[in-house]
Image 1: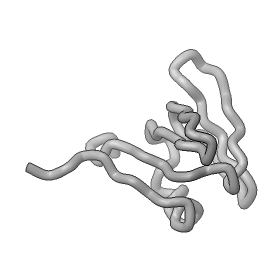
Image 2: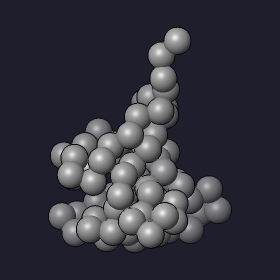
Image 3: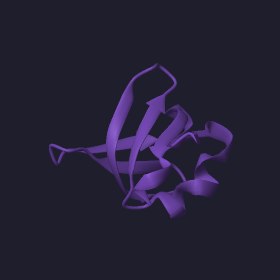
Length: 74
């Protein structure tokens, strides 16, 4: 049985953001907090996630530990 969850470490996040646009992701921060939602947009400094309650979260890239997403969500 294959694993469905894909983990992207902090050093590889920026290179992977284009393919994750409009996909539901879990953004795990260095402090252990996690934000869940669709990746709306990103810049060289941050990414913008819209959660299921339609709230936006602007997350600085240096504060990201990893991104986790479901391989079947593409």
